[in-house]
Length: 368
Ligand code: GAL
Image (tube, rainbow, N blue to C red; front, side):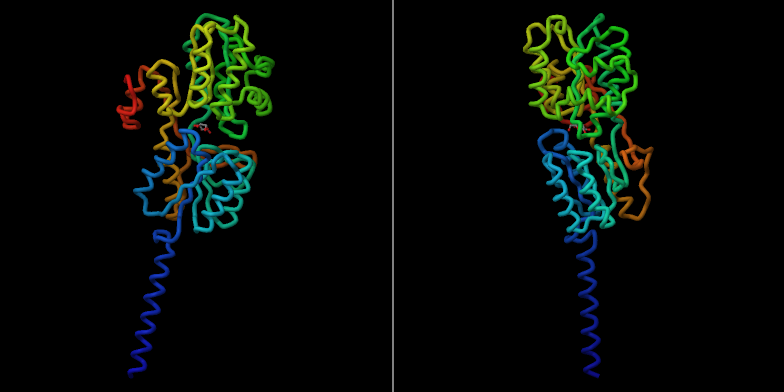
């Protein structure tokens, strides 16, 4: 009798212990991570913004998440993904520094049965991407260009072109959108290209192929680097004659590069005025817009992108099929995508779009 009682209590203890161990191993337990988030770099304000918005969103989820940064290096990115695989992730949300080079990292995740969500930038030339959450990047470029067109003065105005990094698929989408709007205005003589012989050679081509865009981007890339943008702008202005100065318009691909290009143009006494585009609504650029040093930015509400990415991750973890609105070709497959609209911000609506909407605090700026 005594012996069997002992056996029962031992069996009960074993059962209770195994329940405890199972609980610790479950997704909501303290040990394992369910969602891994890998962002490209901390060196650009845009991605620090995304990190903050992820942190805000994560507070409300029942699943454990971890955010890692790749600091512009595909090798570091691969290492980050491996770390997260070892921590047991089921979903990977990843924004690559280099779209092609990230294939190895996501293929490693895929092998473990992990679902991969390409975040903001599409991972290219691999079938190991399940979903893509993105802004409408072609619309970003179109909005930048439309702003330059809307603020054109007379005809034959010098147009300076700059682009993002060729390793980022978005740089092509932005440029495609911009070219669609600019090309007819180059053809009708409103603008003349000031700084790209490749663009000049293609000025009668309405729709550019990827290879044609590569040629232009190769010449006017900033690599998303403010210093590289500054050096290029300096070189361009040194080479430009008086006919390429005066009132100019500048296609700058994002805010970080826009501020440094604007600073260079502002110090050239032969440049009487400039209109320059931007993207991301970086805090520093919001201040530039208030101060009249940058003309516009394309505001991408990162809260929406984060909500969509986390929403997809949770749907997957809950065994549901995430909602998508279309698809993007990545060179290997068509990736199911959820897309978000963008908003043009200039001096006249900066307060309404960025402060009144609760995105930033008024106290973060001066002269509002
Ligand atoms: C793009 C991104 C932009 C911008 C840029 C520079 O891929 O969509 O918002 O931040 O990279 O990092």
